[in-house]
Length: 329
Image (cartoon, rainbow, N blue to C red; front, side):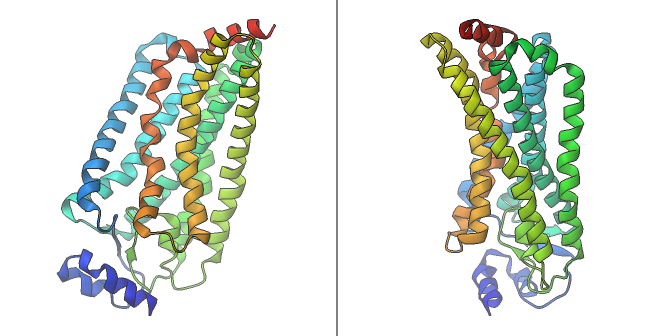
């Protein structure tokens, strides 16, 4: 009964010639229907399109500057380039389809394409979480133990970290797609979302999907949760070291090093945590607000990273770390 009411509620958002077939019973549909953000298509097309263009431009700028400037060929900037590359994939994976929904009302997505989008979004989200851990590690060593920085974070060490982070995300998310393909779908093929989010897809299955739910929860707790704990502990130690400096100028200089990084990290993790809590407990949260929030971490973090390059003098470990060590002495 609830599914029928839901289909009637969103039926006016779809072309009349298609809406009837989407409200009938079926088994394992070949396509899904993405609703986007119901009622906000006109306003959000301009916003999303502008933010996507800016994100693409800024992230490619980061990659170009890092490649062309030899002084930026260091661990922290390699990690920043990893973050820029991850954001390019994340924003492209979701926004190309989202913009086609807003502009062309192209809501259909093939089942296999939906699972591919699901895989890329979630795997690169896990990778991005791992990259934030490496950035926190870089800042911790650079500020709290600067004399060992060059010996600890060498290029061979960074070369080992990069594939570990990539494999970490790619392998952990594979069961998402395998399980999603395994389930039988017979309720509806309408996804009240702007992209193929794992939980939104699995909810359409007509059999017990607790395996997917438990696995997704375990990944959230043991991967993202541990990443958040490590990052929090690292930055607590970093801030303690910064505020122990004797001069205001030194404190401000080193605090500026971490401020933008913390803002970027928060804009990534807060929507992720909000999405998880809303899925389990926030059943009364407005659908439009929920969909907007879960899009934030794919759109906002790419706009914060260029400040790292503009603040090069503050973030260069070769300059900031020895200065901090001399103050601590």
